[in-house]
Structure formats: C-alpha cells, structure tokens
Length: 160
Image (tube, rainbow, N blue to C red):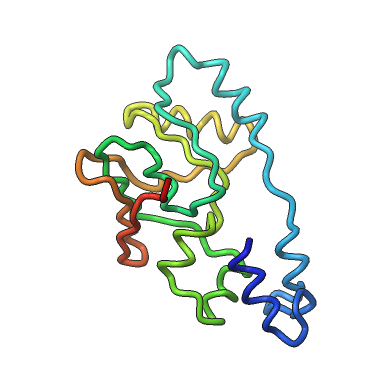
C-alpha cells in the first residue's frame, strides 16, 4: 500500500483521481476482497481425494509471493487475468512492471498449488462455490523464482 500511496499523494486529486472506468482511485483501492470461505468448504469436502500442496494468499509480496517456499522450485505463470484498473493506472504513472508484480496481487487473491492430476476436479469445485478459478501455470524443479511469461519477467522470491 505504501507504493500506491506514494503515487497517489503526488497527484493533484489524490484519492479522488478518476480512473477510465469512472471510479476514483480511493473507490478502487477500497474494493472489498473476495471471500474464499465457500471454496475452502468445497475443497474440504474432498480433502482426502485431492492433492493440495499449498494455499497462498495473494497479498504482501505480489505475484512473487508464489515462491515463498525456500525449496528450489520455479513457478511458471503462462496466463493471467486482466489487470485491475488501479494496476493499469499505476503502470501509466511510471511504476515498473517488475515493481507492480513484486508488490501487488494484480487481480489474483489466492493461489492453490495442486497436483496436476487434480486441476480439473478443483476447477469444478470452484464453480460449485461460485468462485472463478484459473489455471495459471505450473511448478517445476529449478531455481527459486517466478517466471511470469505474460510480461516476460523473472520475479525473485520475496525477501525475508
């Protein structure tokens, strides 16, 4: 949030700055987050059948947070969602793509790391829970990093 505030405080209208979608920066910044309770309930019903390796919130550390695990894995992202308006605005104001994807979740609120053989079943559980799930990519053996193919970026692991 400090990066967002740094940009916002330099604008004449600050949080009242209008975005192309007609909403203000303040409205976009305060959009409620999706609740994943129903999804987790749906997954819990089938917990013994499905291999879920990790559940990672998409906050703090941006997309790079995927490689929070200290083990040597490469997280290859080959598809992504449309960036929220506020993220597009930050890019227009000079925030680098690297900075954006290592700071903000960029439209994904939670990551499920699952066995490849269970992706379809988990996607079906998402529909049952009225939660849109997207198969973003895969985990491979390799250096600890995120390869973000949609933007041709290599994101280092979060510090700490």
